[in-house]
Amino acid sequence: MLATIGCHETFATKRTLGEIGLAAKDVIIDPSEYDLDTVVADIEVIRKYNPQRHEMEQLTAIVYDNPETNICVGYKDITDDEFWIRGHMPGMPLMPGVMMCESAAQLSSYFVQRHDLLGSEMVGFGGLEDVRFRDMVVPGDRFVVMSKLLKARRGAMIVARFQGFVRDTLVVGGKIKGIPIPIDLVRGNS
Image 1: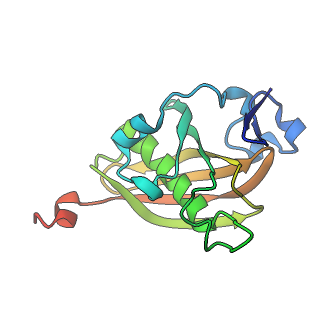
Image 2: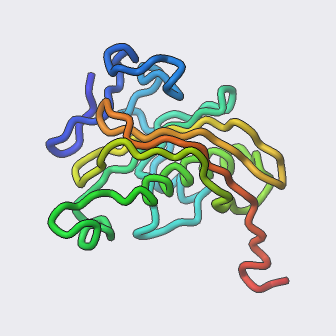
């Protein structure tokens, strides 16, 4: 079964890894374990845990959230109204790699905040490692992003592995680090 958005097919929801050309050791979660049509957290729920708003919201929905395996899956529907369309690139709109990483960061932040794993009011970017961009994301695509928490040191840092897919194609992957943000200092209430 394939979920669809617009005229583009999206990542298979009920296919085997062999059918999409990846070995089990290479993918965070087998696509047969989640369903893109079963939303477990919509944008309103995501907003309870993530502070990004307006053009900086890079998640549309969460479709899988498992604190036992530390895996979370969500997606961003890429529309013709994305703020980067006009300038990246004129006449050939491509989702910037930094926005793909932002989607992964927001997914990881959602998971960590939802399950209070860092003990912080807000999670901020702490770094990226081994990031590889492998293919394009364009308007009309559903960018499926998945994250597996590898390490969580409460009050200090989280490390997660992430992957992003469009249809059956791995378009980005790497590791992301998150750190607690001291909200009082940011707001000037020190």
